[in-house]
Image 1: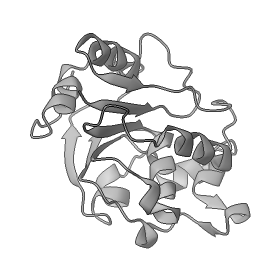
Image 2: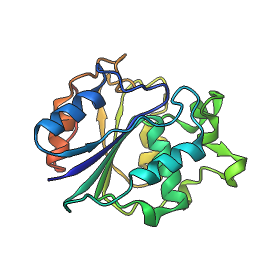
Image 3: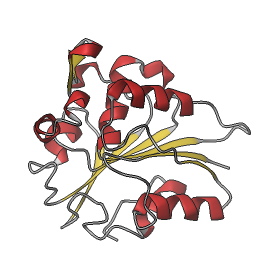
Image 4: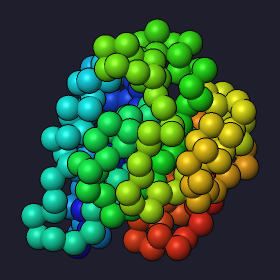
Length: 198
């Protein structure tokens, strides 16, 4: 049995129509353990509180087995922040980072600007400090309004990540039509699978 930790993004209250909600249900049906927490104050997230919530979920699976993280949107920046500050706490065996917002877009939204520039935590997000200890794949959509230059520019290239670009995928969210997403379920059970459009 594999344990999956699914981390949502900004303003996400885990709606039934979102692919992460669909994925959680399909994985449970297949006998996997799924952790899909509601992160604190999703409409006005505080980085320190999200980091605390993340630490609370980073416990080894009770019965052993693989531990896999699937993060979408702002949760990608949460994971990168943790990987810059406390990489040894990140016990994942593999990670999927989906549709991260660009640093500039994140900084332009007051409610989430602290995820890329937070004087209270001592420094801005520094990708040179990020230590990804597990195999990590980036998947991002063409035409993402939250990352118009493309996530490869900001994250894929600097972090040397394996990646999949989804044509016309946008932000890979409900607005872009991502409810059921069979290839993400396939990747969860077989990491050699390439992520494809829904």
